[in-house]
Length: 211
Picture (tube, helix red, strand yellow):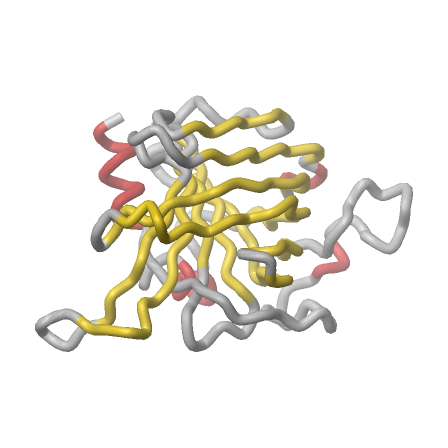
């Protein structure tokens, strides 16, 4: 568990807030062959969105996450990562980490405030301030507050070709850089289709792992 918490702490940081999205072609990674995923336009496919994306509503605003991917690290921790498409201001990012042995592909994963796996974090840049050294400050909202509030649902419905499709939702409370439970992120029912990538993470994805 110590390895998991340390690994998660290194991975969980980045940006996110209240802009909207583009419902045009999912071209966040034009070099990705989305044709390898199931076709959401086919009602028989079981997919509701294109591979490498999440269609969501965040604090009542429609948002498209693209890319959306996952990988398994050398400690057998499974990491899911998605960033709001074209979000150059806030870098709104969701990160989900399952400790070794806790992710079983197709299954329903409920997250309550006191759970330690999976950890669900939503991260965004605080554009209103910087720290004393002039560096950017990021806000972290989590389902795992360990303080009686926060929840999430991550439901994997299919894992064809190793990619994970399903839906998720939750309510996340700010815990960093200081705790403020009046500051929340509400994620309504969101269809996801995470693309499986290799580890070590390919260079084009590394920017989404850190602030």
